[in-house]
Image (cartoon, rainbow, N blue to C red; front, side):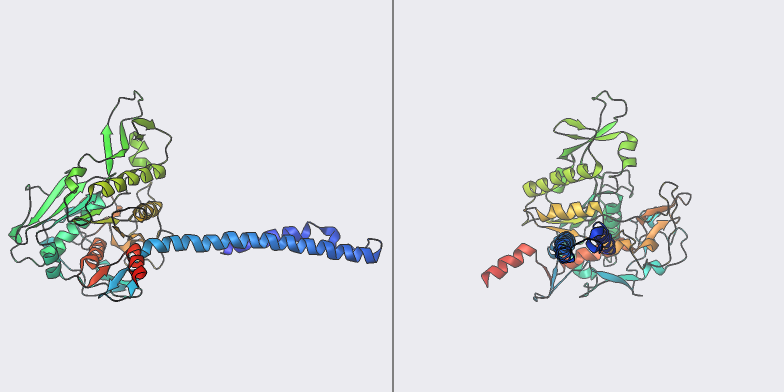
Length: 433
């Protein structure tokens, strides 16, 4: 608003000084001069009024339309408490100290990658573990591990995405293991160690007959190593109109949780010779944002076509902010406390694209809009406390830590005393009144 105000003030001054004769008293025929002054003053006032009205209309449209568009996206993920008419946006809130956290010990969970166990890697300040997310107008249900284990009994929960998705997958397994007496009844189905090099990892909770699976698909669409174009700089392509070739494995899940975004950057695309392809045509000039939106269109079409909403509940977690002091030089200064301001990182073009895609789909998608809440958490990154302390890391997160709260968001949707009601469902209900 301050920029708008300065711009408007500047234009008003320009209009004022553009007609110097308006106040010139040396003109003959005072009577006609006075009428001329009044006439010109009237026309100038009309001109000023028109300009002011124009900018107020534009500014008002910006302030009303865009926030309300964003609000409509949030309203699709409102939570109703205990079947009441009261709805709450669980993503609008603040971080508060809670000494009941953390909810597990990473050193006692065999499914946490060594690189994410910051305390075991030498981090001495544990204040980052003591924060809970508090929505502005409600309370998130406390994570009840026994309740969650029963919700997941005989089910299949699948995470699809990049290393951030794998971190959330590890977090959920560790949270659930706190309620399992026989730890040996929880195992990776292929006997694999947890590593970023494997495309599929699945952990079975045999006592409850469910699996928590992770599929590595950093772009969600097909990535192909190819030299068929005969262009030396092109080493691989992303086929934006085809979903990942492992996507059939996701279909029969009871819960699907997607993420993408961290790999959609020049260094991991153009910098390594990866370009975009649509309809078997190479699109060298296509921007990353356009490509990401095209990939989301493919993903949303696949969901609408392949997923049965009566069987599968779909989630998409939005972009996770990083907090590099200097990404080029890999400078990372992890704080001891959450930031008091988000410093512009509360929004992301990737998150906006996800919100827009979900808004137009036939199959309901619960968007876990964690971008704003995560933007405060510069204190929760791995930093130098990984399995390779020579490399700082202000992208990934410590475990326990922030990803646990993302899973609490998921729990709030699955909690039986919390009813998720989408905007169109509210309208349908209202139309029956």
